[in-house]
Image 1 (cartoon, rainbow, N blue to C red):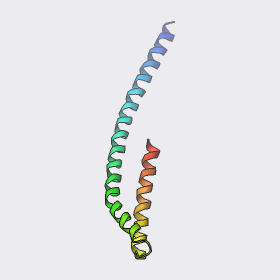
Image 2 (cartoon, helix red, strand yellow):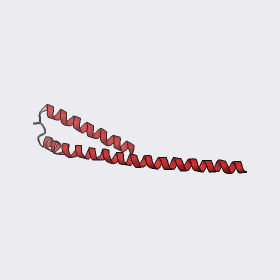
Image 3 (cartoon, helix red, strand yellow):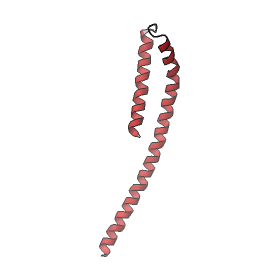
Image 4 (cartoon, one colour):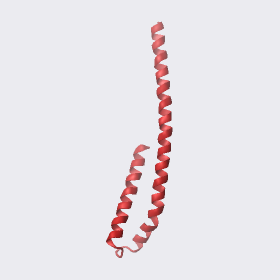
Length: 87
């Protein structure tokens, strides 16, 4: 009987430790996600005016500008997908 009580005590302590560690990891992950979101927002604010201008000038924009914007869009899209996957 004492052995069963000791096993239960150890199990409870183990679960408490795991829970505490997960709470810390989730807190850190949340902070990382917020940092990543802030970076993505900065990218969005930088690219948005260029996208609007490119849309207005559709057909007139140089191919190199379109390529550069395409790369920036892909990078931002991957960042959003990466962040979404982490949440």
